[in-house]
Amino acid sequence: MLPAMSQSELRRRGMTAALVPAVAAAVLLGLHLAAGAASSTGASRTDAYPLTNGKIAHWAVVLNPVAAHAMPSVGSKVVAKLDLMTGDNTQNIVLVLDGVDLGPSHTWYRVRLPILPNNSTGWVPAGSLGTLYTVHTHLYVNRETQTLTLKRDGRPIFTTRVGVGKPYWPTPAGEFYIRDKLMHMGDAFYGPVAFGTSARSETLTDWPGGGFVGVHGTSLPGIIPGHVSHGCVRLVNSAILKLASLMGVGTPLTIT
Image 1 (cartoon, rainbow, N blue to C red):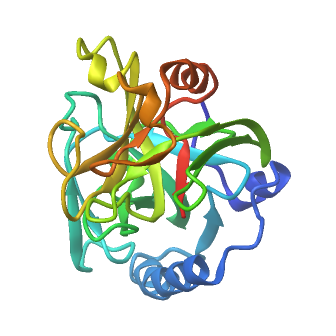
Image 2 (cartoon, rainbow, N blue to C red):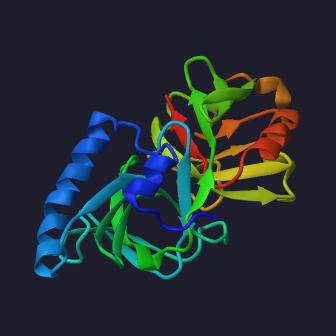
């Protein structure tokens, strides 16, 4: 477990790697508004820091229903609402991308949102989230090569072939995260383990609850690799069991 950290603490932990341009732009926009908020509340400075990069990431439980805003301010546009539970009846979590300190006890986090359009993010007050947990894994799925790779601290530790969505039911591309892990689903179609992700299909998906893309096993190993699903990522059962032993919830997911 890892509590909210200051920028200086993050630097000591190696978390101040350069942000990609799109992320940097979003953070700067947020900081522009945050600076005004800090001034109006008497805060003397604004302290911003990244919490997720290519080697390390942070996630947190949603403690109470909360609105996610376009900027780190309650006066900004509401872009989504986060509930306590997922459609799989598991505790709702979010991937925490960045933080901004508007004062000693006034922090906002930019989180990845499990909504359409995919790749959406929003800002939530830190008090609505639980303790920040750290993960060192990052999952990559390449739809063209139909390959899945898990990295730890930026280094590949597991690779396998997968099945992905058919052209008319495509697996969406983008940046997502692993939301939950389900065991013993009682349906051989999903294999022995199924991971729910924040990715959403704009057409169909075979993930329970409708719209969400999963990473799971299969009762039909002979169809892998290939374009075989309604959008989910399918692995042979031996591979999903191996992946489950190496990867936990909160892991970032990149689909290309």
